[in-house]
Length: 287
Image (cartoon, rainbow, N blue to C red; front, side, top):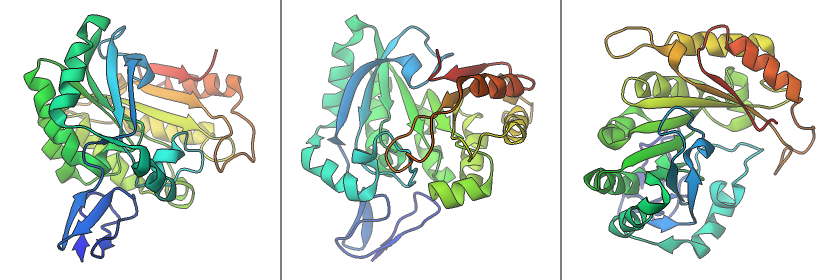
């Protein structure tokens, strides 16, 4: 049996079995990433789709995903590769590539505006080892690395990757323990700690998906944006007001079809509230 050290779950995994995320497996009493180099999704995307609006704007980035996730968001748009029972299906059609092959692909796409590699689609940190090996080579090739993550990881994982990550979009899915624990199956405190350290290491933008009846109050947005505004750099200087926040509109999907999409005007109202404390606020999934 091995103990996983990636996130707050610290799964105790029996020999040959997988942890909660569906991507980490125990072999000879050691936990490793079973999804290492196994790719389910590959696309050249505008960097604004990550979303990153203040990092290499107007560029393209090679976006790559594997399978597995350590949350259980009922509205997941990539459930076929993220939720454990479905991630196991993802294993059957994943293609195995080496870090070297992926970087060669990224380099070949430079004429089309590609600036690097974005690790996205599923939760990339459940397979952080492949990110580390690939990101090193991406930097050697003179390109950039982007991490799109839910931020549910221990800080020692972040520190291992930090020298090679140039930008992140981190989900701050809400700002109550109830929402994170009961709806998402996560830990708000772990995400807050991850964000607090990340803004000291690289360019960070945040995303909050507004789900009607769950995290959509003006009061919660006030608390969330106040916390973001108070973030500091490594010297203790407050820099949070310049951290971009994307406030995105929810659409019914997967296990959460019991409510309609977020009202467009409400997204703008919440963006206005966040804008009282943050310099860069971007409504998402709206006209």
